[in-house]
Image (cartoon, rainbow, N blue to C red; front, side):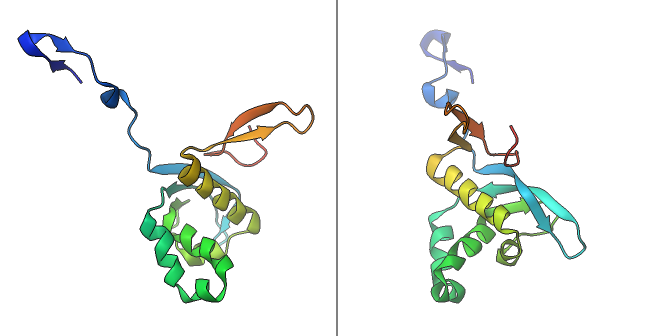
Length: 143
């Protein structure tokens, strides 16, 4: 953005103006994929950042009160915004996912909401060297 200061001098952008815009949605690819009623596999999707409301509303859900483990299913059903060509994603979609995909989404949720990014620190099992991997848009085990 170009700004003119006193006397027509061009001022350089402030640090705030140079910052990247806040990312509120992150793309992912499930390790196995959700299989819909017609047998279509859906792997690519997107998850948005959670709001306080997203974390509070599921606590009033009867299923969560009866079984606290159901919290992540209801929560993920609120924040996954897109999955393949499905018209919508909801807690019923999440509860029918493979366990490995549910675990992936739980970790992905934690990464984007607690860490603020989709990178994870890992160590090589052979040489113990530490490095970062990008979780968004890649399947587990791929680099």
